[in-house]
Image 1: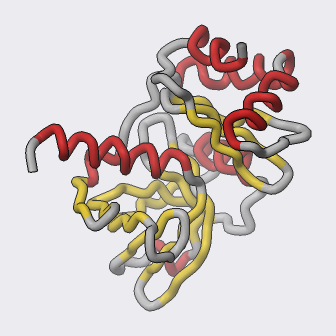
Image 2: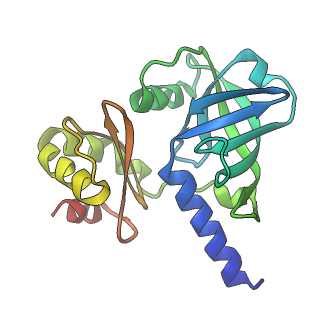
Length: 202
Protein backbone atom coordinates (compact mmCIF):
# COMPACT_ATOMS: atom_id res chain seq x y z
CA UNK A 1 0.00 0.00 0.00
CA UNK A 2 1.52 3.36 -0.98
CA UNK A 3 1.36 6.63 0.95
CA UNK A 4 -1.53 8.00 -1.08
CA UNK A 5 -3.69 5.02 -0.15
CA UNK A 6 -2.77 5.49 3.51
CA UNK A 7 -3.77 9.14 3.30
CA UNK A 8 -7.07 8.33 1.60
CA UNK A 9 -7.96 5.81 4.30
CA UNK A 10 -6.98 8.26 7.03
CA UNK A 11 -9.06 11.04 5.46
CA UNK A 12 -12.05 8.74 5.07
CA UNK A 13 -11.78 7.63 8.69
CA UNK A 14 -11.52 11.21 9.96
CA UNK A 15 -14.58 12.27 7.95
CA UNK A 16 -16.52 9.32 9.37
CA UNK A 17 -15.55 10.22 12.94
CA UNK A 18 -16.46 13.87 12.32
CA UNK A 19 -19.83 13.00 10.79
CA UNK A 20 -20.95 11.05 13.87
CA UNK A 21 -21.56 12.00 17.50
CA UNK A 22 -22.51 8.67 19.10
CA UNK A 23 -20.60 5.57 20.15
CA UNK A 24 -20.68 2.41 22.22
CA UNK A 25 -17.81 2.27 24.69
CA UNK A 26 -16.44 -0.99 26.10
CA UNK A 27 -14.40 -0.70 29.28
CA UNK A 28 -13.28 -3.94 30.87
CA UNK A 29 -16.31 -6.23 30.72
CA UNK A 30 -18.83 -3.40 30.57
CA UNK A 31 -20.42 -1.51 27.67
CA UNK A 32 -22.35 1.74 27.48
CA UNK A 33 -23.85 3.91 24.76
CA UNK A 34 -22.81 7.56 24.81
CA UNK A 35 -22.48 10.75 22.78
CA UNK A 36 -19.29 12.67 22.09
CA UNK A 37 -18.12 16.01 20.79
CA UNK A 38 -14.79 16.95 19.27
CA UNK A 39 -12.68 19.65 20.93
CA UNK A 40 -11.00 22.37 18.88
CA UNK A 41 -7.71 20.54 19.39
CA UNK A 42 -9.17 17.29 18.05
CA UNK A 43 -9.73 15.14 21.14
CA UNK A 44 -13.09 13.50 21.75
CA UNK A 45 -14.96 14.70 24.83
CA UNK A 46 -17.33 12.41 26.73
CA UNK A 47 -19.17 12.28 30.07
CA UNK A 48 -17.78 9.37 32.06
CA UNK A 49 -18.81 6.95 34.76
CA UNK A 50 -16.28 6.47 37.56
CA UNK A 51 -15.67 2.89 36.40
CA UNK A 52 -14.70 4.11 32.93
CA UNK A 53 -11.84 6.14 34.41
CA UNK A 54 -10.17 3.13 36.02
CA UNK A 55 -7.18 1.57 34.18
CA UNK A 56 -8.51 -1.00 31.70
CA UNK A 57 -8.68 -1.80 27.99
CA UNK A 58 -11.10 0.70 26.50
CA UNK A 59 -12.59 0.56 23.01
CA UNK A 60 -15.14 2.86 21.36
CA UNK A 61 -17.33 1.71 18.48
CA UNK A 62 -18.62 4.54 16.27
CA UNK A 63 -21.52 5.16 15.79
CA UNK A 64 -22.41 2.00 17.77
CA UNK A 65 -21.39 -1.63 18.08
CA UNK A 66 -22.29 -3.00 14.65
CA UNK A 67 -20.73 -4.83 11.73
CA UNK A 68 -19.63 -1.71 9.81
CA UNK A 69 -18.60 0.46 12.76
CA UNK A 70 -15.28 2.19 13.34
CA UNK A 71 -13.27 0.69 16.19
CA UNK A 72 -11.18 3.06 18.31
CA UNK A 73 -8.68 1.89 20.92
CA UNK A 74 -8.55 4.77 23.37
CA UNK A 75 -7.17 6.16 26.61
CA UNK A 76 -9.24 8.42 28.86
CA UNK A 77 -7.95 11.49 30.70
CA UNK A 78 -10.22 12.89 33.36
CA UNK A 79 -10.90 16.62 33.61
CA UNK A 80 -13.25 18.63 35.79
CA UNK A 81 -16.18 20.79 34.75
CA UNK A 82 -15.14 23.33 37.38
CA UNK A 83 -11.53 23.48 36.17
CA UNK A 84 -9.70 25.20 33.32
CA UNK A 85 -11.06 22.66 30.83
CA UNK A 86 -14.65 23.14 31.96
CA UNK A 87 -15.54 24.76 28.63
CA UNK A 88 -15.24 21.30 27.08
CA UNK A 89 -18.08 20.02 29.26
CA UNK A 90 -20.05 23.12 28.28
CA UNK A 91 -19.49 22.27 24.62
CA UNK A 92 -20.85 18.76 25.17
CA UNK A 93 -23.91 20.14 26.95
CA UNK A 94 -24.60 22.57 24.09
CA UNK A 95 -24.61 19.64 21.67
CA UNK A 96 -26.43 17.02 23.70
CA UNK A 97 -28.15 18.64 26.68
CA UNK A 98 -27.30 18.32 30.36
CA UNK A 99 -25.22 15.22 31.08
CA UNK A 100 -26.43 12.79 33.75
CA UNK A 101 -22.77 12.12 34.63
CA UNK A 102 -20.62 14.57 36.57
CA UNK A 103 -17.26 13.07 35.57
CA UNK A 104 -15.69 14.04 32.26
CA UNK A 105 -12.93 12.67 30.08
CA UNK A 106 -10.83 13.62 27.10
CA UNK A 107 -10.40 10.67 24.78
CA UNK A 108 -7.00 10.04 23.21
CA UNK A 109 -7.19 7.71 20.21
CA UNK A 110 -4.29 5.26 20.30
CA UNK A 111 -5.29 3.38 17.13
CA UNK A 112 -8.31 2.89 14.90
CA UNK A 113 -9.71 0.22 12.63
CA UNK A 114 -11.95 1.27 9.77
CA UNK A 115 -13.12 -1.01 6.94
CA UNK A 116 -10.61 -3.62 8.12
CA UNK A 117 -7.73 -1.12 7.82
CA UNK A 118 -5.64 -0.07 10.82
CA UNK A 119 -4.96 3.65 11.28
CA UNK A 120 -2.50 5.42 13.55
CA UNK A 121 -4.25 7.31 16.32
CA UNK A 122 -2.37 10.57 15.76
CA UNK A 123 -4.01 11.03 12.36
CA UNK A 124 -7.41 10.88 14.08
CA UNK A 125 -6.76 13.97 16.21
CA UNK A 126 -6.88 17.16 14.14
CA UNK A 127 -7.23 20.78 15.14
CA UNK A 128 -10.22 22.73 13.87
CA UNK A 129 -8.92 25.47 11.58
CA UNK A 130 -12.14 27.44 12.17
CA UNK A 131 -11.96 27.25 15.97
CA UNK A 132 -11.20 30.95 16.43
CA UNK A 133 -14.34 32.06 14.59
CA UNK A 134 -16.59 29.10 15.37
CA UNK A 135 -18.51 30.61 18.31
CA UNK A 136 -19.18 33.96 16.62
CA UNK A 137 -20.14 32.24 13.38
CA UNK A 138 -22.57 29.88 15.12
CA UNK A 139 -24.14 32.84 16.90
CA UNK A 140 -24.53 34.75 13.62
CA UNK A 141 -26.08 31.81 11.77
CA UNK A 142 -28.51 31.15 14.60
CA UNK A 143 -29.60 34.78 14.91
CA UNK A 144 -29.99 35.80 11.25
CA UNK A 145 -29.78 32.71 9.00
CA UNK A 146 -32.12 30.12 10.57
CA UNK A 147 -34.24 29.70 7.44
CA UNK A 148 -31.14 29.21 5.29
CA UNK A 149 -29.77 26.64 7.75
CA UNK A 150 -33.10 24.80 7.72
CA UNK A 151 -33.08 24.74 3.91
CA UNK A 152 -29.47 23.53 3.91
CA UNK A 153 -30.34 20.65 6.25
CA UNK A 154 -33.26 19.67 4.03
CA UNK A 155 -31.23 19.80 0.81
CA UNK A 156 -28.14 18.11 2.24
CA UNK A 157 -29.69 15.44 4.45
CA UNK A 158 -33.38 15.30 3.46
CA UNK A 159 -34.22 16.06 7.09
CA UNK A 160 -36.53 18.95 7.93
CA UNK A 161 -35.12 20.57 11.07
CA UNK A 162 -37.90 22.88 12.24
CA UNK A 163 -35.82 24.85 14.74
CA UNK A 164 -32.16 24.35 13.76
CA UNK A 165 -29.36 25.46 16.08
CA UNK A 166 -25.83 25.43 14.66
CA UNK A 167 -23.60 24.15 17.47
CA UNK A 168 -20.37 23.39 15.62
CA UNK A 169 -18.48 24.34 12.48
CA UNK A 170 -15.31 22.77 11.11
CA UNK A 171 -13.54 22.43 7.78
CA UNK A 172 -15.74 19.50 6.74
CA UNK A 173 -19.18 20.87 7.60
CA UNK A 174 -21.71 21.97 10.21
CA UNK A 175 -23.23 20.30 13.26
CA UNK A 176 -26.86 21.31 13.69
CA UNK A 177 -28.84 20.50 16.82
CA UNK A 178 -32.39 19.31 16.21
CA UNK A 179 -35.04 18.18 18.68
CA UNK A 180 -34.06 14.55 18.02
CA UNK A 181 -30.27 14.87 18.00
CA UNK A 182 -27.41 16.20 15.88
CA UNK A 183 -27.73 16.57 12.12
CA UNK A 184 -24.44 16.64 10.25
CA UNK A 185 -24.33 18.85 7.15
CA UNK A 186 -21.30 17.93 5.05
CA UNK A 187 -19.64 20.61 2.94
CA UNK A 188 -18.94 19.97 -0.75
CA UNK A 189 -15.54 21.66 -0.42
CA UNK A 190 -13.17 22.29 2.48
CA UNK A 191 -14.26 25.25 4.60
CA UNK A 192 -11.42 27.62 5.50
CA UNK A 193 -13.22 30.89 6.25
CA UNK A 194 -16.52 32.46 7.23
CA UNK A 195 -17.13 33.29 3.57
CA UNK A 196 -16.92 29.59 2.73
CA UNK A 197 -19.59 28.85 5.33
CA UNK A 198 -21.88 31.60 4.07
CA UNK A 199 -21.42 30.27 0.54
CA UNK A 200 -22.96 26.97 1.69
CA UNK A 201 -26.13 28.85 2.55
CA UNK A 202 -26.40 30.72 -0.74
